[in-house]
Image (cartoon, rainbow, N blue to C red; front, side, top):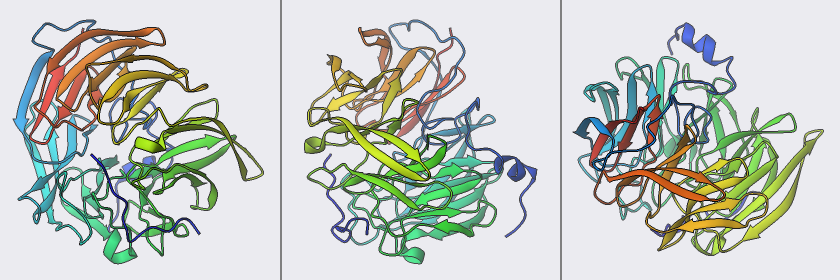
Length: 426
C-alpha cells in the first residue's frame, strides 16, 4: 500500500446539557486504569492493557469463538465501554454513507446505528476502499467519531441520536487526504482534539458538550497517524505527524513547541509515535523514511530535541507498534515484513521472525496478541531474546488491517467483512 501525498498540501509548518458524566470526564487527564477500551490504542493509547490471566495456549482450532457476524467495509478499530462495542463501517460503497454502530459485547447484536452521507472529496482515492479509518472515542454519554471525509460527529451513546457535528473540510478548510481522514480523535482534559490541517488550522479542540471550539492552533499540515499526549518534564504536549515531520504542540492551546524531520518519498506518515518514561520518542515511517528516536527535554516552556539514533533499515507503514520496557515490537519492512524486536535506545534489532505479515498488535498479561494482513490471529511470548508462539489460527481472509481490542479476557477483532468475539480466558 503506497500512499501518495496530498498535492494540495505540499507546504510545511510556517446544545443541550450533558449529564453528570461530563463533570467527571472534564476532571480526567486520560483514561489510564480504565477496564474498558474507550479509544484508539486502549485506555492509555499505547496498545497495552491490564488483563486477567489469559490462556497460555490455544487448541489447534484457535480460541473459543463467542460470536461472529457480518459487519461492513472499513478499518475503524473497536472501542468498548460498559458492555458495548462501538465502531464504524461503510454502507452502499463509494458514494454511500459512513455508519456509526453500537453492538452488544455479549451477543454481537446491533443496539443502534447512525448513518450519514459521506461522498468522498475530489482528490481522495478509493484504491484501498473508502474507510472509515478512524476509531470512535467514548466520552461519558457520547461517542465521537471521525469519518473518511473529515466529518467529526458526536452522537448519544445510548441511542445513536446525533448531538453535533463539524465538517472539518467544508467548515474549516481542512486537509483532504488521498486515503481519507484517519487520525482518531483524542481526549485531553475533557476536550476532543482533532487533526484538521489546511491553510487556516492545524489542530483544534472542541467541547464534547456542544461542539464549540475551545482552541485552535496555527496552520499545520497533517497526515494519517493519530495524535498522542506525552508529558515532557512536567509539560503536557500533543505529538502528531505532518506529511514530513513529527511535531509537538502545547496540549493546552496548540502552541507550536518543536518539530523533527520524518519524511518518505510519498510524503505521508501513518504509524503513531511512541513515548517512553525515559523521554525517548519513537517516530517511524515507510520505505526510505525509516525510523528515528529522539530525546525530548523541556525547561521554562522551551523543548529541546536531540537525535538518539536513526535508521533507514527499520520501516513501519500503516500498522502499529508496541513498546515493552526497552524494546519496540512491530512488523518491520515494506513489501515483505518481519515481526521484529528493536532496542529503542540503540536501534539494534534483537531478532526478526518470518511468518506474519503487516501485523497489528496489543500487549496484555505479558503476551503479544496480533492479527496480520492475511487474517492470522496469534498470541506469543516476546522478549529481547526471541518470540515463542503460544497459539495461532486463521481468523479471516485477506485483508485484515485493523488492530484488535481486548477487554478483560474477551478479544474483539474485525476485517472488512466481519467482526468476531473470542474468549482468551485461562
